[in-house]
Image (tube, rainbow, N blue to C red; front, side, top):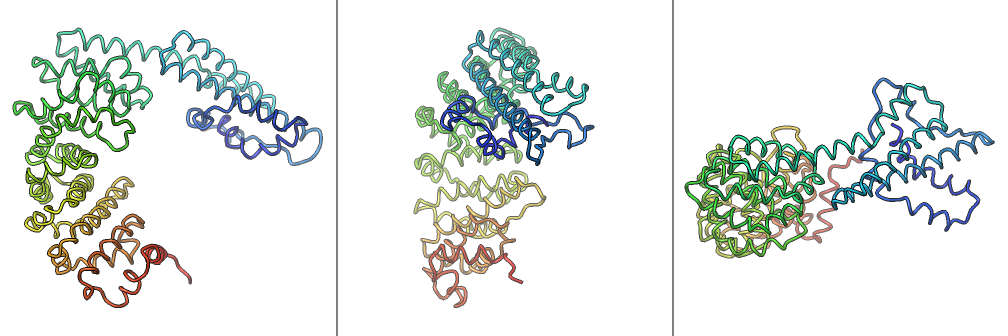
Length: 499
């Protein structure tokens, strides 16, 4: 693990390096700064074991502890390796930047330089430590940049062929096969998705989705669009071709099959994700928002399986975050009734991920005053208390995180709705207070989540403000009377043992 050892040891040996070089410190810093480009990326790209058969100690770089000429030589060798590693990092960074910008003529020269530096790095490592010839050969082979570059060019050439097939072919089979291959390419990471978008894939796919003769390919094409739109460039391309209008047409077209509408919902969920920093595309989205929201809540109501419901509800959850008008539209469309009824249907809401979307929508709707009466009418308080008890069915970290989000948002929704005296009274009658206290006092009940703790404390205080008699004196003294931060610190430290 040559490069891993080099970068792992870099901070540790910095002080030794500075002590051994009899040069001005500022000058040394200026020299190093030229090469310090995204060293962390190098760790990710190159920190892979050479093989499993070598002794792990062979990959370690050991500097002798003794003082003398040998120690001085070892330090010099290490300094050379560190310097060379930074140069490799710089060249790779330049190469990927030029790939993204399409500067193909300069990519080759950069790759050649990087390849030479990597070879020099291997030779310098051999000088720093005696390495068996077989391992030297393997290092040279595995660290060579040119094969990777050839793979990149081959991938780009293949990509251009696929896009051309999608744009020009009249064969459903040929286009479907090209879309499948394109979808596979999108799974190789955001950098490639950005290149795919720049090459015109989003434009070509929406061209398919606007032709009735290719209706059978809508779902497949939209799934690929959703994958590409994980990057800003994909969303920008979608906006340029009025992709949102196309999505609205498919969602509102009753003749569209459920699979196509579900994948259209997936694209909506992707482009409205709060994780995206750019919001320019949302301006055109607002023009079609009423139609899209209406179609999505209908899809939630008629969903034939959990996956379809998850995609539609996820899109709705994201939409309610960035515009309050969406919440008002959903209330007019009886969304609370539809969503709470869906929670009783195991065929539609069958995982914590789906429940997370439902409770997110309810939390955002609960800021509106008229929401409380509808929640009461649909026995929504009972559902919120059930969601407060959500637990993972497996040891999956993602499922555990989803359950934490469900608990947190259920408590937030309850706290907001409890501004209404009738909701607060109903919650107290349904034993909400003991459950909230249990979540506050028992870290295991909330999966040791601080966010769940804060939400439960807020909900408990809201209920106590309206009905002080519902809280026992001891609980009031610890969970209600102190400042929120003091109660939080008290509850968050309850898992510690002082024995």
